[in-house]
Length: 228
Image 1 (tube, helix red, strand yellow):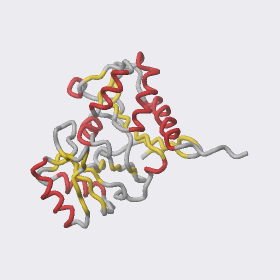
Image 2 (cartoon, one colour):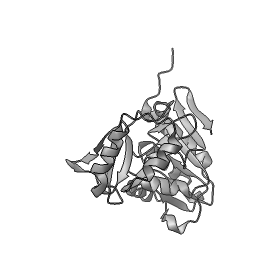
Image 3 (cartoon, one colour):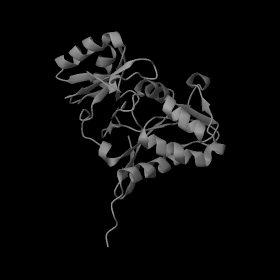
Image 4 (cartoon, one colour):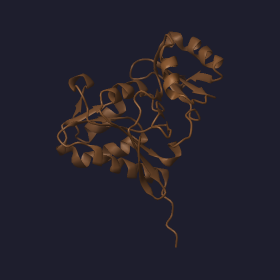
């Protein structure tokens, strides 16, 4: 008899547990946001007495960490983190990612920037040849949204403001998210540089400067470790 294929949820659990090997005992760990990271947070509870605590990239992750008895420190209290563990909406063969499906991209980029190593945890559905199939999240100051949408239209993209309960979603930073479809991002570094310069853009969800050094990819045959 063949072994039944693992579900996406089971794959997320596997990579969340596999990420524990990158947590450095006695130090503070950077923790991202999202459904896959929630699996990592649950696994991290098993070694909470071996770490000093965590720096979290969102209010949602902070609440989950605290509920499991893991101390949460502010980013400005920790000069440098040994590792940041987070998921991705897409990751390419060079470790460049699209992130922000959970609307935490700005804080994720901040925590990633102060970490020596970025370990991405994802299931195989997130592994892509080129970025752009997943709607690209861009955090924007509300007064700039209409102009940013027009700028993406000029690039061939279709953008709209993300909604929640019939109103524009408000991020942990008090801003809005614009989601963009129709883009084929063949040069993530140049794209990130370009869009980051647009007035009113807080953060673009392309992670090329803060790319992953390691990806733990959940596959039907187990966790595959990719090093970039």
